[in-house]
Amino acid sequence: MATDSSPIALRLYTPSGPPPIDLTPAPIRKIRDGRGRRLLVGAIALWMFLVAIAVMKEGAAPLGDLLRGSILTDSIPSTLGFGWLGAMLVMSGSPVAVAALTMLGGDAITAAQALAMLTGSRLGASFVVLTVAFLYAMRSEPAGGRRRASVSIGIFCLVLTAIVYLPALAIALPLLRSGALDPVDLAAPGAVLDIVDMLVGRVVDFIVEIVPTTPGLLFLAGLAILLVSVRLVDLALPEAADAAHLEDHTDWRSRKWRMFAVGSLVALVTMSVSVALTVLVPAVAKGYFRRRQVMPYIMGANITTLGDTLLTAFLVGRIDAIHVVLAELLTITVITVLLLAFFYPLLQAQVPRFADWILDSRIRLYAFITTLFVVPLLLIVAF
Image: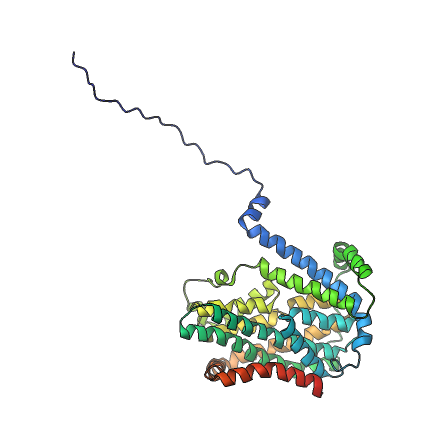
């Protein structure tokens, strides 16, 4: 009988079964994936923000004796320059805005001066975007036109902030002095203040005990904590290049009110106009936006950036601090809406033209940057 000597291939089939189950708890998986790390850092940043406000509030009273009547706070123009220059030096507007309200709480400055200092902090915060734009253009290699476009975003931020906040200051000052906001008697609920005290009270008491009693040191300690918290917020957010990928199509980007809403939301969530606006630098450089499209975004971010400032006013516990923020918030909102509703084509034509005029000449560019430092110094010294 013939036999088949061909080799027989044996294959073993085993059921693959369900995929392996990851028994790691969900919070640990989120931390491992990176999202949880950002949430954790963000929570720590918020806690440090609360600690910083409480410490600065404790240190503001003795600081008042040091600053009252000084060259930095002897007039409304000087406090405007003080806030402007201070925000540029610390490379963030939020700490200076918080300082203005805590100084008001300690009677170091008046409500009108706090309003001026708050306005100055917004102007100084725009300078941060210009600095980031220059650094980005120097280290990246986009096409010449796109590099120029990314730098011009910093100029856009400065111009759009100035044309809103300076007229708003002129309107908000008489509004604040008229007493029209006096019926607005808002205050943080006692339960909220109790929770805040429970979260930060012991740490604040410890800091107050260990910091020397020299006037101003406790306030500066709180300011240092606040700067760290702002830096932690930056670390908690996605990279700017990733955040720039908002959508693949561009039709909504040409609609001013949608861009206004996006800018408002981003600044509200990040609690930092500097973070919200610096996102635009790589976004414009990589072609995700055209320059003219981002103006409503900038104007929206300039409104909701006052969200953390309003929170500070509640925590300071002074009704006049709340009135200061409300006066600023109401006036800049009205001016911004009017500009977008009736003057948007003019802004689209003139703001890019002004930015190009500055960037066409190194002398004009250097003069523009120099002016940003000279003007606040003159406000401090001359008034």
